[in-house]
Structure formats: C-alpha cells, structure tokens
Amino acid sequence: MEVTGKIKVVNPEQQVSASFKKRELVVTTEEQYPQHILIEFTQDKCDLLSNYSVGEPVKVSINLRGREWVNPQGETRYFNSIQGWRIEKVGAPTQPGVPTPPVPAAQAFPPATNLNEEEPDDLPF
Image (tube, rainbow, N blue to C red):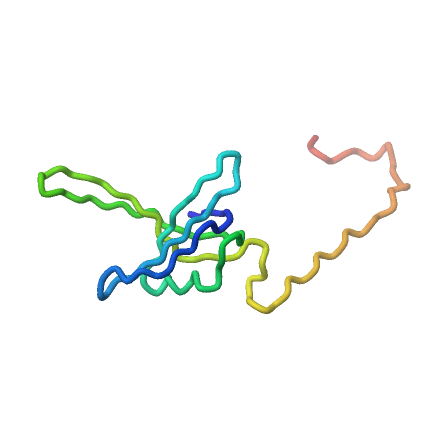
C-alpha cells in the first residue's frame, strides 16, 4: 500500500529499548478531506527519513500491522499501526543528483488530404 501527500512532521529518532528504535512521520494527504497519517519507521528504516523535511511531497510505501493484547483484567484489546518501509519524493528524479530528462514536445502533423470515402472503415465504433 502507499500513502501520498506532504510531510507535516518528521520526529526525531526514539530509542524505545536497547534493541528497538523508531522514528515517526506524519503525512497530510491532499484530498477533499485531508487526513494526517502517522507512519512509523523502525530499526534500520529510521535512516530513510534523514533526507526529508516538512512540506515536501512524498509517496510512502506502508504495511498495516495489527496485534492483540490481553490486559491484567483479562480483557482483549486490539491495536493497529502503520509501518513505513520506503519513501520517495513525488516528482523528483529517482537517482539523487541526476536531472529528470525533458519531455519531448509533441510533433504537429498536417491534416490528412488523401481520404477515400469509398474505403471501408475498419474501426469498431
């Protein structure tokens, strides 16, 4: 799955435990009712956010994660998280430092003058 929008927040890296770290990103979608989507990057994926800043348009590849937890009273609760695993700038070159090649202009063609009305039309519509 993917989320596309502009970066609203890039939080600093958090060392949750001795062996687990995470970094959070908030992306605001650009639709009629914009959504502010919190996406977590964990472990080695935290470094992916180092080259991004607030306001940049991005496309983030995500996985939805869900887990079950039973509290001390025996009640079962469910939690969801959105984990990012790739991020790229929208409209930017795919390789840093390599400019995007210009799109060639469409060629203008003169109107056809050799139309034959007696020739059958083979188009299906």
